[in-house]
Image 1 (cartoon, rainbow over the protein chains, first blue to last red):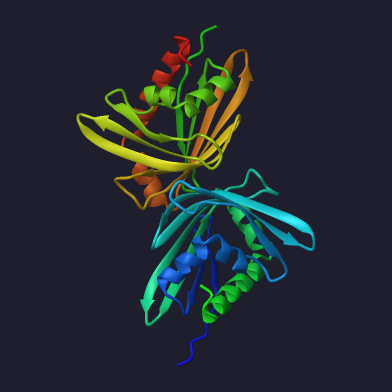
Image 2 (cartoon, chains in turn cyan, purple):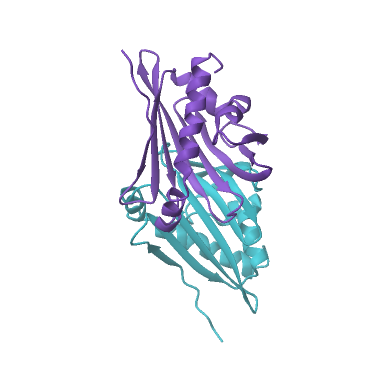
Length: 160
Length: 160
């Protein structure tokens, strides 16, 4: 049986939330590792045209993180704190430092589907529809799709 | 001139946010101290009938916190992380451990009004109107008002 993996990106109608869902041929534990191990995370996050440098990484409840993505020599920095890190769920904050007053509250769920498959669900909550819609209009889905495709290849290669 | 200090608690119509505003006869720096110094914070947070015990407190960008409020021998615990701590704004997460899956993203602004007065503005964002309205219906305004009245007395007494 062949299953295609597709990323679903949805804007909530009633609340300024973006939800992303994607299945992987991976265990829940692998998805968790890919989001908490800084060496693994740096290899897949973001679009293909770019490298990620982890500046700080403490993936535990009450920890924090910062990374820099480099595209054609231009640096884009991001930071946040880990509100909660547990095997089935990560809750963290997220700021793109180019817009230092903007903050998203992100929740990631790792759902075990059995048969070596797991579903990643994420939710990004911000405080206005304007901010949410500007992010959606920024072309973010390119980076999201390319990042998850990299993660899928890493899983297939046994790297996670 | 006498000014009365009142707390305004508002539910946003379009986004699941609660906003609280209150003026104090204090400087912006005093309001910041009252929210970042754990000894001061424990003295005013919460309703009159209760004591607060700080379990962990690291009020800096990327830090975290946990405290326990004791009412009639019953303990209520809360925790979160500090996304950003700067003189005019604190952004933090907030979970009441009795509802461990619920998370609020809280922003506090300290506005200098001159003449020894400052305004505290807070915003609590959650991911559903149901959660927001349940919190509003819980009688939270009693604790909010009593807490800020304690803070006002501490400021008048020169304790902050």
